[in-house]
Each structure stands twice: as structure tokens, then as C-alpha cells.
Length: 128
Image (cartoon, rainbow, N blue to C red; front, side, top):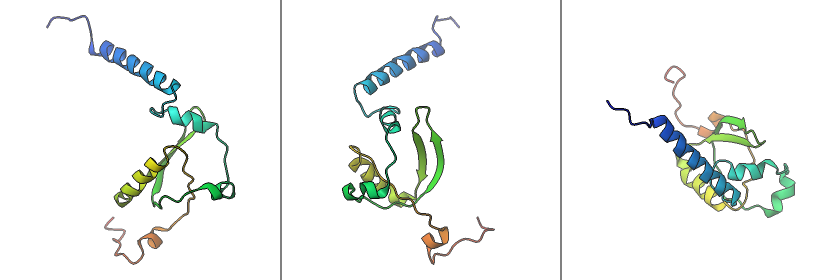
């Protein structure tokens, strides 16, 4: 097998560097694309209480789910993962699209699984 002088590692690092350069350029241009474009602007925003924003909000949807992961980014923003039943997919996508030019204000309530599922036949713990 003849050596070509280029390894896949060097090719991928070059394309990776080019991709990172393009991403930095998009972020500087005010783009909302990329992982850091929006998060950096959110990192400096203050906490607001419901009473302070209540007059300006528009209800979009109600979604149930479980928070499975939260992590503080290195620039001071928080990323949390919400896992929801698939039935909420259209509601969540609609909320995403409607809130692209602003924020979402989320009031979180704890709901026991038994209250959420109501009178549904639940599997026994042994079955789970």
C-alpha cells in the first residue's frame, strides 16, 4: 500500500478548522445559528419574576416532561434537557418557532406520576 502523504486525521482537522472558522464568522454576524450564538446573549440576562413579565407574555402551550440533565456552560448560561412524551412534539416545535425572536418563560410545577397518569392501568413494579 503506497503512502499518499495525507492522513484522514490531517484532512479532518483541516475541515474541522474551516468549519469552526465559518461558525465564528456566523456568530459575529449576529446569526442565531450555532451552539454559542444565542447562549452567549442569554448569559448576561437578569432573572425576572413572573409578576415582572406577566403583562407581556403570550401563552403558547403546556408541556409535561422530565428534566434529565442540566449543565452550566463556560460562559455562564444554563442548558437543560427536557424529555417529553412524543405526543407533545408538535406543541414543542410550535413553541420553538413562535419564540425564535424572544425568550420563553417557563413556570415549572411538580406533578406526581400517579396524578399525571390518573386512572390508567399502571404496570406493577415487578413488570417494570
